[in-house]
Length: 314
Length: 286
Image (cartoon, rainbow over all chains, first blue to last red):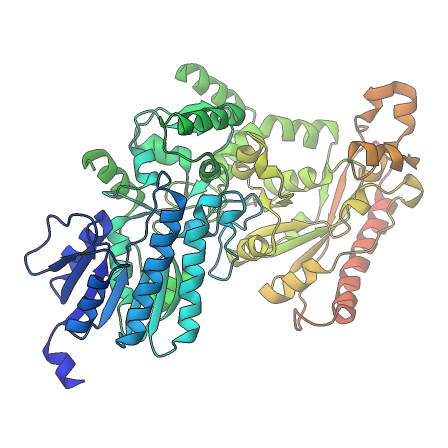
């Protein structure tokens, strides 16, 4: 114990080249020793972050664990690219995650934090207004491409039971917005976003900085389990667009669906049409466990988020 | 364009008594800093319901309330009422009463079917006007947030019964009692008198109902005389009789038999309110 106190805790971040990974590394490197892994080019890192350009499915990744004792792994290297070939998507996400966990078990890493998503629950008209962590992961019912992310979440859950000696934390944040390159952030950056005529669901968004602090909270010794993570209190989608000064284009559902299908096959749009349900039905989470057990409290308000989207480009 | 919209909005607002509108607009139903509650309810949207609800409540059905002050001003509460009249106007009447005749106004949250969110415009409108998709979690959340929930434990069987069984309560569901026990919520029984006469059904044409996918297809004398026009409810007078709040104690996950005994207490309270109300009223239309 004493020896561990003397040096900084050593944290491996997979997928450090992403926006979220970078934001986390910049916050974490002051208090922790950070090792970053990504198969993409890793840029704009603080100097004391050591980086390794490797695919998590490959052998080079294993060396990171052999070299030094790792105190925690934050697994962010999860692919969310609807354009990517689905077999590669599945392989990267599931085989990659399995590898991460295998290495953690083998090298007795005491803590693993995985970033899943509240999207695994899926928007549905029968949803209760707030889903808690026990709710079934039904997103795959209408949207096949998300099944690997559900399987990934489930896989982490089984690991949680198989390795009680490792503190596994699964975070399921709502739509992450701010300086991140993901579907909700891109949607909110559109000058004239399309909306579904006659639908205006309540939505939850969370600022990327709040996700970073939730991850840091999850690194606290003793914390384990599945946690929904949400930002400020929910607002209607229209209010969010209104605050952003957007001029939405409401389109009837059948027309929009046809447009997206056509846009998808002509590669004009990267929006898979089943994801339309996100601007149609509620998919909101109950974050009370994160608040009471993680001690997590979002600090960024809707207005902060709006300011960030308007004033900071991707 | 926005001028036109403003003047339309103003017309809706002007349909209210200014004091009443102020009270409704500023009521506390647990909204966040943006004016919305977690279900998407915004009191301001009630203005669009105003003229319609006030016309039916005040002029068409000339509703009279009795002992509405028995509903507490704040804190969680479940209103349990009898369901009647072929079309479920009684829910709207009860909701209107709590807004127009209870002081301070209280928003009654009712549970809607889960296909409601799939209909464009209706979905948004229902949410803004305070309706909630009927799930156990949602009901619990409303009560945990100290809201006022309404339930008709007779369900659709209550609405669609024929006139020979008017004011006889059919079996009550048990869900509301388990919910009340679990969340420690007082129950206010409500007897709604008048609804049974709005569309006295002499026969339930089940084959037509099945064909149209409706819970019931009532045949009423008015329909036989006036055709489709007879499908409108008659301008009966509604009387709402509120009982004393009742609190129950015990395990919420007890056997049905135990819960049933408690439900029967509520049921007999409503029966008493109905009998009293029927005795008091001078006529169906007055």
